[in-house]
Image (cartoon, rainbow, N blue to C red; front, side, top):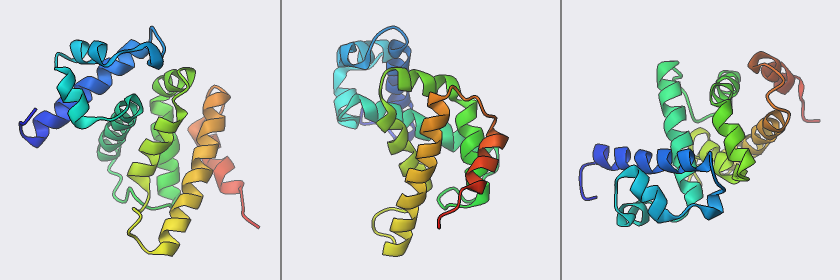
Length: 170
């Protein structure tokens, strides 16, 4: 790939989009790297230079979608647990619910969690208390999202915000 960062990001997203398109017709395990690369109009080397596993393509796409959504919705602080971020979390995931359902149908839930962890919480070099707090809330919110997806998004984002706000740790 060797190009600039924007070109690299574009090609990575092309690969991600290709996998997602292929996921609509076959299981991820049956999709080959060659198929993904061909559909993205890149060589297999481009895939291997940027990704180790197909789940990374899914996580990459989810992170990109989150970044765009957060920018469009003027979300200023994106990496801390707060009521604003909880609300944004539910509205964002509701906006991509068809993709999330597809990911779950293909049993790739861990890619959702990996993407979520990447964009919302402190890295391991942060203060230990911040790391533990981040993991606690990450798993809690992911648990709510997981149940919401499995229930077919029956509740509205507003209802999910209310439900999450009513849960207390005793």
